[in-house]
Structure formats: structure tokens, C-alpha cells
Image (cartoon, rainbow, N blue to C red; front, side):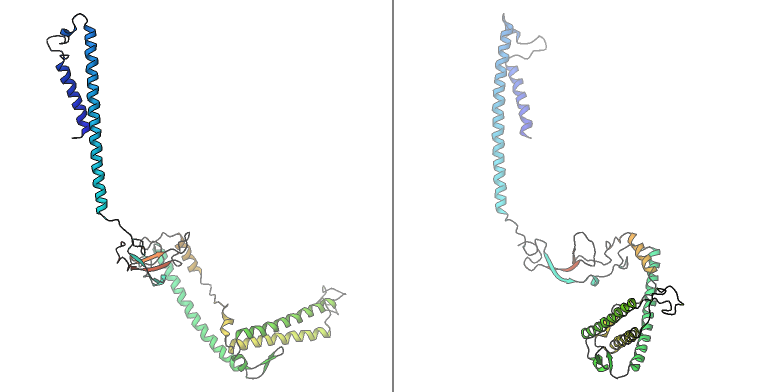
Length: 348
């Protein structure tokens, strides 16, 4: 039993014993045993007894209280000593600094596409309804048709290229002041081609600007280009002179040389594939793909892969590359490797 519960009971018992010993507790057959003590000055005697008895009880209570707190302090000191002994007995835990107490470290990095595809969402990261499955099927069929068209176009392009190579005879050609043959094109890199080609284009543009200046100088003052039956300009707005005819012929020749040089390099140039980098085949078949993208955007995430589309096992750790973005393609993935310093325990 707790000391706090024993102390009030002990004080109450002392009060009862004291009152009984001083005959202050009344018997059932009279009005109290204290009548025999009162005599003539009954009230004074009664108050004196009550005062001294109260004082005695207060002293007893204070002694018991001080003894209780001394005993409590001794118990607390013993408990503290025991706890200190226990702390001294058990050594402190030191976590491994290499793995920070985890027991594993980052191993080899793997690519996102090396992770197994989630078979619930088929890699889309969304809950696939019947409508979405049908759209995916349409998109795949569309991609197959596009691949077949590209193969056919490639065959046709190779055939045309072969015919063009036959037509492109092995004789000297020129672009501006530069003469070349098929052998020259075979050994020419892209930088040299680009330099010669741009120089010829600039010369052609210079001739065109010169022709435009002549148009302004020889503008028709009779109709100003408003009358198609004008005998001077035939409605062109300028009078065609012999000098302008010569400029027109130079523009025609320069353009033909540019086209011929471009075609020759695309057929025989060493880095001719660079000329085709900006060409894309459009078949107007993006309707299903755009509709699928819109539907997937509002579809709920797959609960099995949490919208990633790939299954991440417990042996793989994912580290986001950016804080505010949740793009699984940009994140880094590592294989968990057991820490060699702590042997996987996380503690030294």
C-alpha cells in the first residue's frame, strides 16, 4: 500500500485514541465525559483541552510528514543509483557512418526502363478501363500502319535515289566559281558543303536585290502597273531592259547550280544524312493518340505501382531528381547493397 494512503488513516487513528484517552468522546448514556472536567469554569477547561490537543496533533502530523519525505528521498536516491548502474552496464549504441544506421548503401544505378512493367496498368501508370484499352489498341494498330508506310517510302526513296545517281553523270559541274565532280562530293564534309552553298545563296540574293533596284529605276511612268494593256510595261509596273534580262538569266543559272549542288551532296556527300534531319513524315494519324493522352490525364493512378508504370521491389531505391516534380523518367534508381562496414546491421 502507498505511503500517501497510510498517512491519513494513521492520523485519524491517533485522533480517535487521543480523544478516547482524554474522555472527550461522549458515552451513549450521557452528554459527554467532559462534564466531569468542567466544574465551575466549564468553557475555559474545554477550550484549553481542545487547544493543547490540536497542538499535539499538529506536531504529530509534521513529524510524520517529514519522515515520509525523508523516506521518499531515500527511495529516489536508490532508484537513481540503480539506473546509473544500468546505464554504465549497457554500452552506448554507435550507428554506422557509411549507411547512417540503415544497413545498406547505394549500389549500381539502373535505368528506369530496366524495371519490370506493371502488368496491372501495362506501364501507363493509370487504371485502364475498357475504353482506354480499346484506344491503346487503336494507337498500336496505327503505329504499325505508319511503320509499314515508312518501309514502303524507304524502298521508293532508295529507288528514286538510284535513278538520280544514274542521271547525275560523272562530269565536272560548278557552283559559282567552284568546280566539282562526284569524287569531290564523296570526299566533302558537311562544313565545306555548307560554306560553299551559303556563299552561292548570298550571291544569288545579291543579284535579286540588284534586280529589284533596277525595277525601281525603270518603273513605268505611264500606268504605274495598273493597266495590263500598257504598251510599255504590260501591267508589270516596270520596263524590262537588256540589263535586267541579263540579271534574270544570272538568277536562273545560280538557282539551278544551287539545286544541282544540293542534290549532288544529298546523293554522294559524306555526311548527307544531316540534310534529312529536319524532315518528318506526317500521316494525320494523331487523333487516337491525342484522345488517349486526354483520357489518361484524368484517369486515376494505378494503386499497384503508384502511377509509375514500373514495379519497384524492396531491393531498389528511388531517389527523386527534382523536389517539386514527380516524373519517374527523370528520377534515379539504385540497387540496395549491403553495407560492408557494419555487415548490414547499421551499428558498429
